[in-house]
Length: 246
Image 1 (cartoon, rainbow, N blue to C red):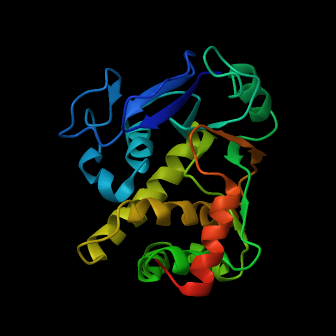
Image 2 (image 1 turned 180 degrees about the horizontal axis):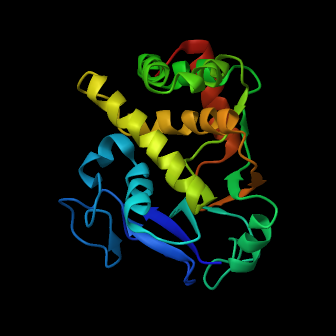
Image 3 (image 1 turned 120 degrees about the horizontal axis):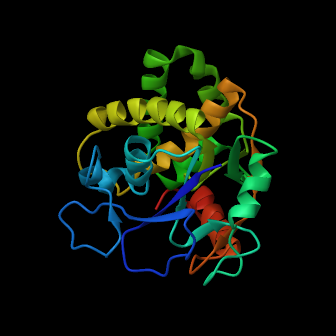
């Protein structure tokens, strides 16, 4: 079982010393090298990093990585496990293989929005018009997925961070679907968008794909390095709900 998990980073950061992990400089186009694999070689969308964020790394993996299982994590967010050299809490090969024997897809545990829906949370945090444009694209290109998209208005939990490990066929299928939608959305959005606007949409589309395809998955907790805690995030979410989008 060959597993490759891309670790997306845009700056110098400590990386796990394990062959399963592939450090990748995302948004590398026009930037100095970090001494690791860049996402501006081979078929890529590196120049679109401002809008896609870590998803330029997922695109690069889709087009340039060949392994039985392919995944994406962040330089500061990993699936939790028994540890590798330099990182005592992140998943190692045995951890990942064990989970993949249970299901062909590994995802982070869902984030729960107890006081609002996935759709209304997006509206409070971002420009909801962008998500509505994505809905229009889904309805036009993949109408069989549209009812699951509409369910975002009722869901109170979702998988976030664009993190996953998937069997190759699922990874390729998901990426083909996701980027066909997001690249079209990017063409329809007005200029002067907030940074990583398409990355935020991508987070909400994962469950749309999962629900429609009925893909079996297993969830794993995430260990974070240097990321604000969930209490702070919860307070910010409540402020946005009460006072409106920042």
